Image: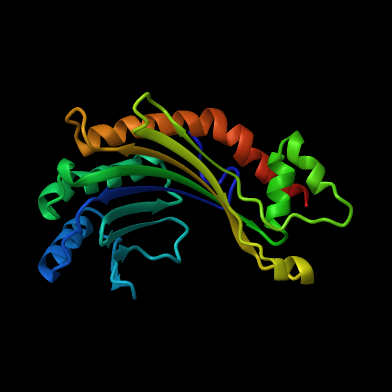
Length: 247
């Protein structure tokens, strides 16, 4: 499976557990949950509250590889940036899913969806949208627009969502986020910002068989690894890396 330093500048694996009801936000519950996670991963040392009320516990972000956790009103988050091995990220995410039911009173009845996200960031000082269009193409029906005399692409963020089963409750989504604006294109003064590629495997809960969060996570990560390795890397990640290297 892909290692983060091969093709892009940053690689990360995140898990989001989306809930129907708001998660607990009282002091004792929040601190107890983060203290238990810190026991497992002592490098998680920076605790703070965002302006919007989210609670965050993270390691030193100045390091090339670091973990982070967050509790939002209706979403429990776990992330690992540039993991040395995929299993290290997976162990962290499984621990979160294991302790969430009894430390944060999250049940499968309360779950809206479980996401596993594979993210790839590329540093590029230039027109992000133009680069993405060049690297991935736009299809024959749209290329005629790009080739208009004097034209420049200033917004191109392809996205596609697919169902992976007949119920449409298991889905995957590929999206690309660029960060170039019209002012930068007009002045040709570009910042050294990131192009992000996100690939998410989502399992909606609702009615259906009884499955645990960990069982679902393991199934989703198997699907995610296969698609990332066999389709995303050769058809999206590598072409973007090659296009940036050629500039």
